[in-house]
Image (cartoon, rainbow, N blue to C red; front, side, top):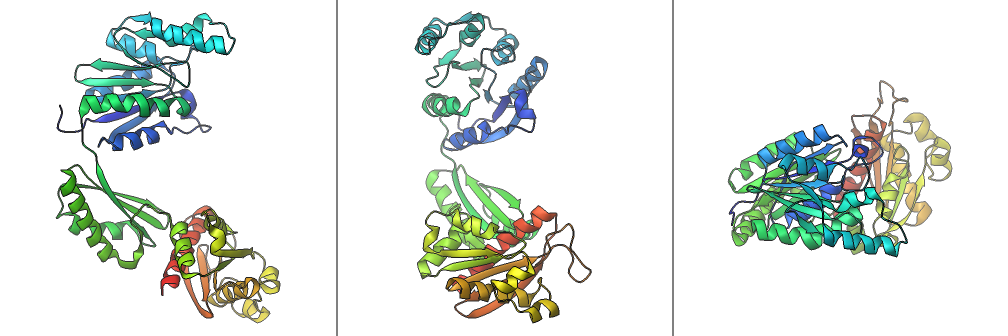
Length: 415
């Protein structure tokens, strides 16, 4: 039995996956299942319904990997070419599988449909294939052995793929490769640059040669993922030690070590302290409120919010004075503080968070260019503000502003 996990690849077949209307997601499901047995996907690709392209993709994968999973292209129509292409590449004859044919007859009979000649393509299978029966569709899956490598041909619809992978594919992978589970830890951070985080992590990581490291960055957030395939007890000790040291290095920039999202963390802090929050948003247009109310049970910590886009709404609903607006402008520390205090008065919440800025692409000035954003907070009467200048287009500025507001709010709650 192999001592190291196999190199695994996924090929998704279907011209529709190359356009803009449908995203390829089967590899995400497959990756989640393979991680349970310590196998990582080393490469994935999408190939259209073109025999030449598929032949090349399969050949290249078999040159690199010992576990190849192909999804899609097993249906009855002319563009479903996976079975035929793989059989021809491996020099295998195609023949009707009698057991699969009987299952197909039962399915079509239940639906009161006649079996057409093209329907038989689904049960015309490469000789010697291990058949994986499909309890949620008509096309069976297949397992083929090629020297030291194995190829799974699986249906593309997720409602068919998921139960087949869980109930049939995983058992065969365990028997074939017998790999041990992959131990993993993660750390999520906010309001730091990827390069700065990486520079602080690498010297610590150098002391743990058996641990693999991945850093994932999106605007305003970073996730560190650490994996080990050492003996389970050693892996757990090393990963716990590394995680603790990096958390100590990063301090309060860490908001989760349990794969939790930022709104959930903020909501839990508010709920534990018995505090109600209200939001006053301008340039983020309600995204802070929406993210917080996506959290189950948010009524226990969220009172409500105001989208105060115009100066008139800032004045009439939130009580931002005309003097502040004329002297400092809507995008200012003074306006942000007044908005946060005003939404607390309006809703009776103990905490108010506000955001006002220039998301662009228009509206910027030399003094306040696009990306200038001010945040205000009122915590049981104590007020504070902070300003930032974010890069990127309108969507990026709004996303960064929302994430920064939630992370800054997290710090205010724990003070």
